[in-house]
Image (cartoon, rainbow, N blue to C red):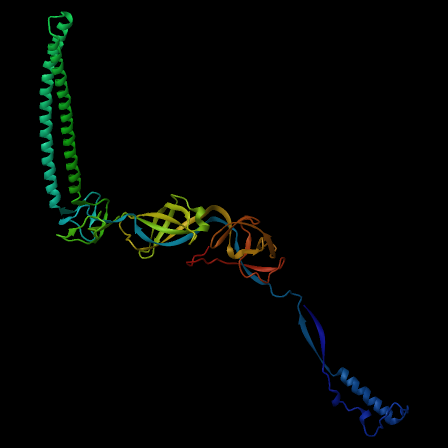
Length: 446
């Protein structure tokens, strides 16, 4: 510090100084009549004027002030270090939980509900009996089929016996013709030609009867097969009187009672109603519209996290299937996630949020997004160097998340980057760096 003297001049208004020239005793001179006279009055006036000027010059007050050679106040900036961490870019999509399978169970044949074994909330296994129907017409039809089969079997037996008789007759007549023909050829004139011809005709007729008998037997057997097939058909229809569960699940609706006439579900002329509604509850699916920009990151079998706000729990899932087609209207792709439900905590209709990891990198240099400056095609980061001044670094950014950015080049681990307001900072400016903790959603700092 040094002490200097500064004089402050107290200016006295000109009106406050009485100039002797304004005295009435001294005549006012004009340029045309001015003459220089040395008189006592003039000398006195000049003397008073000089004293007045000296009074004006020395009418000052002097004070001592202190001046400093320190620079103006240094700006304080918030900084954080460049660290290595794992980064992941995620997308959260909302959807509704639906059963992996859900169907209305109809009756295949019309009939009355004879027994009902399930109700709302009943859990069933695959193949478990849920209801039986009474179908009198079909029962009578099966009895008729059985009678037709018995008749066809009798017809087959009759044809078989007739064929055996025809074959026996043919055998006798054929042997007779063979012997007569051998004698006729070996001993000419011993047997008449007419006798040989008659024997040959009987042999041929017997052979024809055998062929007819075989055809009749084949027809009877075919009729027996038809009768048996009809019985199998009717038995298959009658089996539908036992309504069973096609898969394991829970009954979420029941629309029939004992004695209700169930219409055949295959009939289009009637408004058939289902017996029950069955939902698979050990596995759910989430149908999500994935935006076009994220379609390329969808991989079948990729694990995802499914959070159900109603339960305040998260469940593991995986990408099971996708349409591989971006819809023109919404520019999204139909994607499904399978969510196992072994403990039966999930229920149909629950709202769920699915978090898909699009990109992930391990052990990379990262800085908060607040430290990154984008100016056109150039990306920079302000760094406080070891000298305590601002250093503007050009960097290459890789993966960006909602909070951090990967630094591919331009920074090193441990560099102190500025994350506070940088609008007034310039390269080379001295700053006072103060470490800050970045607050992230949820109140966690990094």
